[in-house]
Image (cartoon, rainbow, N blue to C red; front, side):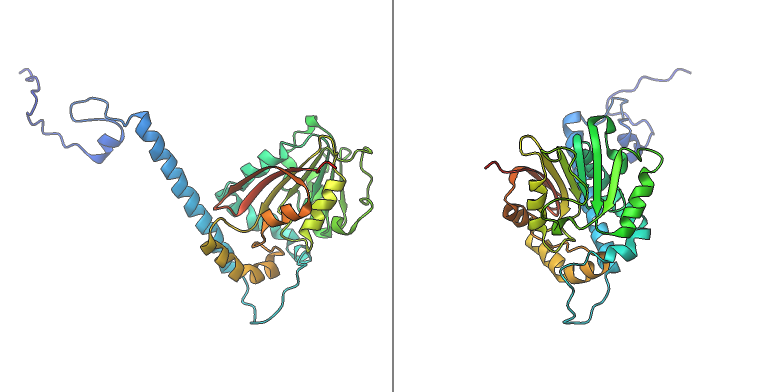
Length: 290
């Protein structure tokens, strides 16, 4: 017996499910997938929701981990000594949260900017080490004031580029004349990098001004990846309320006004981009002429 041809409006006995629609199968067999003009906004919307959710998760984790400090207990402006006790498990503590919010991608983009004679300040445990494009670099010097952090950073480079990279311990902000190692050229460094360093130094504007003084004044560049105040007042209130506990535990004042710090440094701003509701700052600077 031959099957009768299907006529419009005739029941087929087939139940059309959400799965059929999801894969683009319509009742009459015609491709029912959404056109690209409609799919792109849906995809972008999904990414925005994902970013919002991961950011909330990240901050919720950080807030949950904060210590309960007695009221009125002062936390010093300089909390950098906290890194001595957290260095051993620092990478493990932040790996997941940095992946959730795409911080590794931002670190990579920043580090790929390095060329010529390079200085990385606040190198920490060397989390940017794998992102360097070494063929563009003539030398790399790294500095951090945490002895334990420097030890871990050095281990990451040992056996790979040990003769190419100099990693030292020192407090850059307190050195007015020169670093504890010499700049490779009289003109200064071609590229200076710093990721998450302004939050832990007691004099961030002074640090930036000093970096400007050891950067090549002709075409040298300073690249920063920092976290601080948000675009939004409600989020800044949360950061302010939890800043003392976060600084005491992690050695980081996460509510600083990064824009004001950069302005006070006297350096020339080339570009500022902000991510994660404005709390992550991507900044490119250069020494101001004259």
